[in-house]
Length: 119
Image (cartoon, rainbow, N blue to C red; front, side, top):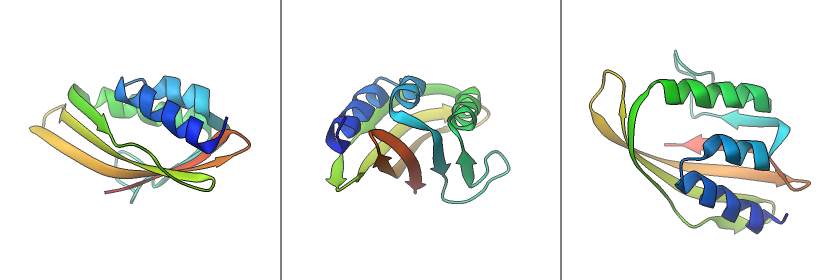
């Protein structure tokens, strides 16, 4: 798959909330996920697809309700692409909130090898 095809597929799946399906289908086994900073809940860097799955499951377990998900069209530059992700959600024990982040992905050999989030 080309970078454009991977980006389009990622957006398609994530708009439906199918994050784990996107990871299984599009990510390399040794992919890296990078947060803006470490928190008590999540490390700054998560390495390996199994650990990325665990991170996603933990995030979803902390989520009371997902009210809506929006993703921008991907912006492609060579083997990288970026999308804006907006989530209208309620985390357990918190008020409803809107989260917005820039998600930047790097592709190599037809798979996503890294994702990095900026808020």
